[in-house]
Every structure is written in structure tokens, then in C-alpha cells.
Length: 125
Image (cartoon, rainbow, N blue to C red; front, top):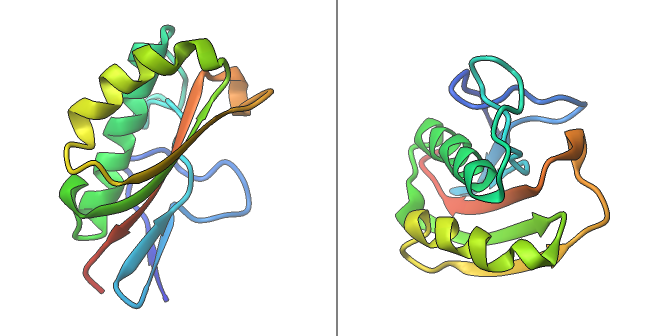
């Protein structure tokens, strides 16, 4: 196993890693809209928060020698399913290869954010 770590994405806020590569597949921890420079959630709207999540994912993919085009599967968590359309409008700008996906509404997310995205992608070992 190879651990992925980059300062261009938020540091883990618990006992986990940003990502791990096993047999050429990168498994990334869910990304919430934390600004990696400030360590804070400054985005307010679902669109702004989804965009920050996607920028965090881009940094992790880069650190793994991967890209959005190599994403295999995503799992998306929304605090309010009513945000589904607005979330998708941002999501589709990044995930142009249309990976497999699950998207669910949950009761709560860390730090009270509106969304979280988890990614599995092909990577370099």
C-alpha cells in the first residue's frame, strides 16, 4: 500500500489518511469543502461547497498521479436532497468521464457542511 498525502488538500481531521493506493487503484477519503490553506469552511452555498470539494479531489488525484478522467466511482453525500440539481451542475463540470456514482442525502456531515464527495480512481503506484 502507498499512502497519498498532499498539502494541496485538507489534512485528515481524524484517524485516517487522505488516500491509499492498492494494486493501481486509489481510494480517497471523502472530501468536504475545507479550504486547505485556511483549514476553514468558507464556502456557503451548495455550489461553492461542491466546487471546493472538487478542487480538493483534484489535488488528491494529482498527488496519486491520476486525474478526473481516471475516476472509477464516486459516492456523494448531501445534507439536503433538495440540493441535488445544484450539486449536479457543479459535479458534471469536473466528472466529465461520468464515473459510476451513488448520491445520498444524510442527516449530518462533519463541520455542518452541505456535501461530501468520496472517490475511487485508477492511479500510478
